[in-house]
Length: 588
View 1 (cartoon, rainbow, N blue to C red):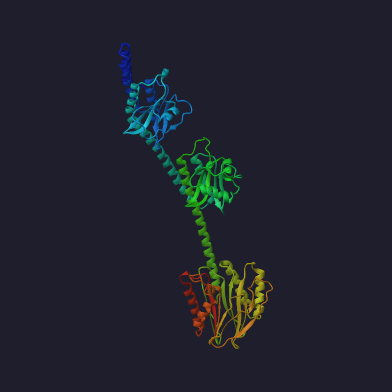
View 2 (view 1 turned 90 degrees about the vertical axis):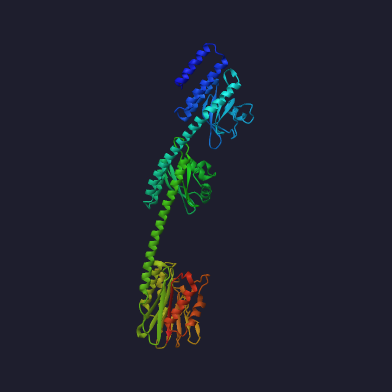
């Protein structure tokens, strides 16, 4: 690429040579013309690689070198080949020359750089420095007829270095800006793509749709034909979605050990070949997978996405890995939203179930307490956060008698409320039709035949004859009620048998007591005795007895109120963990 001015100088040089001008002067004129041609070439509008190649040809032509190259210094410090002519095969793409290059031409006499010269097949290296900082190196090999480089020719190379420093630096800056612009364009495209995908991911609560969208987007961006998404389920990696190949081989669950070995090292996108040896790596490699992208929420590993190799063989770039990782984070966020939405729906269902159970429970409690000559009765159930299976009832019987009952069924929520309703209906239907022991046996047989084996109820049932002040009772596995005498007598009402619904042919013993003036009979559920303090100590029988002693001379309502207050004081800010239910019968 010769300019008209350079061409004119070359024409004059031919005329001088023909006119007998001394060779030394002609040589100097030729070098000056080459420098002019070099400067013109380096200042042209060619691309960086083309400029260096053209400049190399000018220098090699002037010095009649058989091989040459330009090495450009990279940020990491190595020098990479950017233009080369005539180098031997197998030349490394980059060499280490150190950061402190001399300002003069390096020959094979330089012990520090003789290895680099030999690896490239060169005889001289000419550092090109800008403001004392090396930016490139011009290397030349042997000359025609094996002639060595003269001192003047080495000086010419130094002039070449001085003339080319600024244009080469400008070209390198231009190339770097061009690369940055290209990367910026890729980033902008990726951001637009991720924004669109994010909008779609957040518009659905369908896990399969989310996984399909992520796989399709990743395959399209990376230009691959296969993708598999694994998720951690019960400690094992299971195939959640696959595209581009049959999932039979990949669908076999990965063992706990295999899952741990992969997820432990998978902190960022990683080549399949870099995984620890084992069946997981072998299986993915056999399926043609090349890159793994972790799925993680913070430090919690959730699985990974595996993508196949490109058909073109082009390796994945850093931008590809960053895009894949960002997309994986969006996928995790979308899947986590689905999980939270599912939990929210489940919580709403449970709340509704609890509300129904609470309504059932409240509807079964008596709305008022009957007036019984010589006695007063009062009961209360203080609900806790969850619906328990507590129940109490006061049932008027023929002849002015009164039935009292308290029960606690197993479980919580709607199943417990349904079982409680069965107990309530049975008590209401059978109260007064048979002695207490026979009534308990009939209810036990009904529950055994009509409920699941893990369902049962504890029941205390008593019938009061106000005329004789006699309370006949049977205790079906319930907390024995407390009898508190006005003047200090205390005992428990425990005669009976096992909980109802456990043993089909259970036998129940019946007993009775005569209530003296001022006596209290207090029936409670385990929400009272098992109420825990902040130190996790139970209220227990001791707590109940102590509270009743303080209210020994009070009426039924006052005694019950004092007991509830004592339980609340015991639990403190922790609060209750079960309903507090109690029924108090007092002889006036």
